Amino acid sequence: MKTVLQTFTNIRRQELLPTLVAGLFFFCILSALMVVRPAREALGMQRGIDAIRWLFMATLLVTLLINPLFSLLVSRFRRMVFIAATYCFFSFGLLCFYLLLTFAPTHVGLISGQVFYVWFSVFNLFATMLFWALMTDRFSKDQSQRLFAAISLGGTLGAMFGPWLASMLARPFGTPLLLLIAAGFLLCAVLSAWWLTSLKIDLEEAHATDARRPNSSEPDAEHTLIGGSAWEGFTAVLRSPYLLGISAYVLILAVVATLLYFTRLQMVAALALDTDTRTEAFARIDLYTQAATFVLQAFLTSHLIKRFGIAVTLALLPITVAFGFIGLALLGSLAALIAFEASFRAVQRGIMRPARETLFTTVPRAERYKAKAFIDTFVYRSGDALGSQTEGLLGRLGMGLAGLAWFAVPLAVIWMSLGLWLGYAQAKRSTPARPPVQL
Image (cartoon, rainbow, N blue to C red; front, side, top):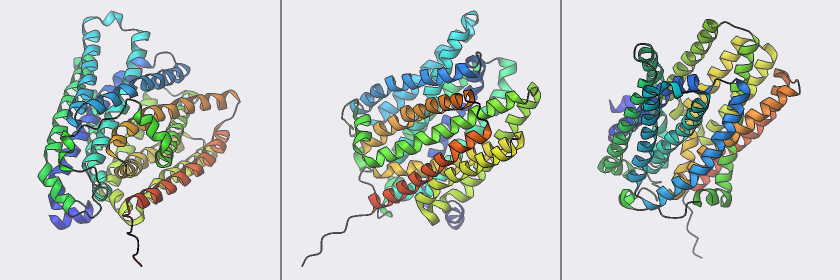
């Protein structure tokens, strides 16, 4: 068993239970998100594509307002307290929407649907951000490179289980039940987080074999207040070229993902497909994406990081984007769109995300929660807003897929360069400084 684990997943025997618990944690988070997503689409996307662009702007504003509140929570309370408080807050929000849909369905209209769309978009980013913040705080740099891909498998299974559960329950029991189920998954996520933070003996044994143990993994981390101000995450990003580089990488990621998202909407609308054909096409994208992501996370990602390092791993998604937009401009077909989007999502979730989270293992604890929250929510939503407005501008200028490729490919080259620099910077930050030579 030990040989099999190390050969295929790079998991050591003493790390198996913490890895499984972390995977269960991620499974609960992604199940909660994905089981609610159909309700988000049904309630929020009622005014067309142009309305979605403004919903992105509203989401950006809300994330800007919430970030200092979250940072204040991180500063004043212990780790499990602010983790539990955040997930319980979103559980309470789901319960409120459930009561609205159940007892006052006639009051659910365009405005409330758009409110839910924005609320879910904020919930989506904060839920995953907080999960990965705890992972980078709980596991060392060496462990993150070996274990994050395996931990991500739990999220992939949740991303597959959530939509399946929604398809089975939505018709016989109605959409409101999905919100209640999602709230239950979030409470299970809180229990999983508590279980993970209580596995001190197993994790300390694993840390003992890691020569580059981070200074944030001290035994009393759970009981130590992080402290600091509510705006510390924002100021930390401005002071650190390393965090600014991560911010730029995430910003370009969001811009590219949004360009691809609106390209899909525009292409499908232009093809004038019937509802069944559109559903089949998008279902095929999701099927190919989840299958490819699962294979990458299970057998390839940790070995890629170990063999080629974070720098090369972070550069793979920009390379995929460059070739994808070129192929889409040359072919311009729905098949090319499906292949491109499935490849993009698979590489993003299966390879890039575990590698990107490893970047935060070399920063102080406060930055892992506060600066990471600012980057993964406000900076990411800034990219969403920028990408949606850019796509709209290109469309108004009459630039088709070829014009989009002319914009996206140079952006991908800059993105790739950022990924390479971040990987080398992370390796340099994690290398112990040599003592001065005594003459």
